[in-house]
Image (cartoon, rainbow over all chains, first blue to last red; front, side, top):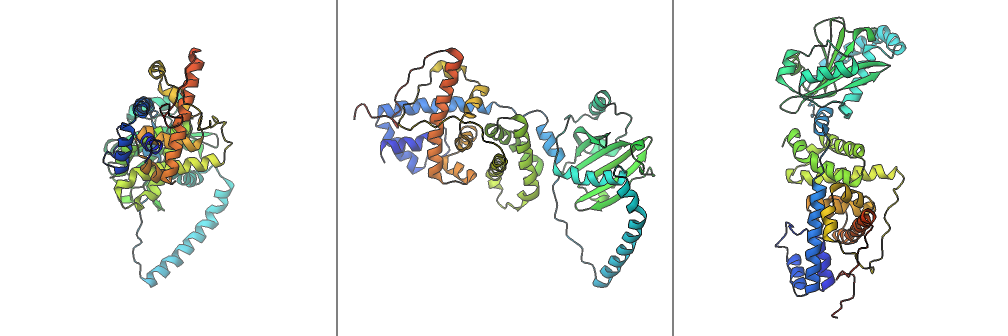
Length: 250
Length: 182
């Protein structure tokens, strides 16, 4: 190994490198140790490396990034399909077909003619929320979140279910603009990494808000949804929790 | 390791790597978030948890490269000949260096040098480890680190000159200059 090779190796290692026992590095050090100029150069180089590393390491991630990552992402779970006897499966398929056809006949014209319906909103939220998004305000304090909505977007008087507020951790919130209407989104995180998104919309903003004050549940892909109305608000929850666990929070 | 722990452990170093690659804060934010999104989808397939960190850095770098393919390249600091002498960095220059200065100098370099340098400085990775993360041969990493560090040194001196109006002397680096004793 000549001096240039030795320097090339040692310049590629930080002075506090984690491979002090690497024979190639040891050999390079031995070569450089015999050359005062090279040794001096390398000392200066490593001092500069450390100074640069110190400055770059001092860069701080922006506030809210972590919360946004946690809020915007859901851990997809493998969803094992229970074994269904063939005959029962056929019956279920036929029933589903009949129900779907009836539902389509009744609802499709309404849904297609009203893209701003609550049903469309639910569909779009199912597409939007799992993709990841930025929070506009990262704060775990629900009172602060409520103040932020009231002061910056004139959104107030919504209710967060007590169990959701107390048994999960809020990460922050944002607004969603939808056909000129503003919805509030608050994100929660369970201790085992499940995401719960609460979306609040004025009932008057949609022609078909949920009619019941009791949550109505549905499961699609890896997301459970719940919808209900209370006061002048329509509520939608989307979560990676299964229905039983989500029920316990609402 | 659960998802929250992984985010807690790696979001800051990943963000620093991202902001070193793409200077814009919002791009770095998106790259970091996108990396964890991909982890949430595919990371479970990784059987060896020891490789989590390398997996995340590799994924972020791949995302960056994909993004860059769709963008106009930034004008970059021209690569000087290897036979050119390296400028000395005065102690006063080092003392005046702050994160913004270093980041600005780093962003004057070409992408090919910036990524290995960022991993070198931020994570203290060896050239073998950088080779794994960036998926390029170790010899290439060594070459890019060496040339990249030379360029960075020049960029830092240039920014120092611009700031102070000082003339900084140039001196020989043993690896790029004839040995005066030889």
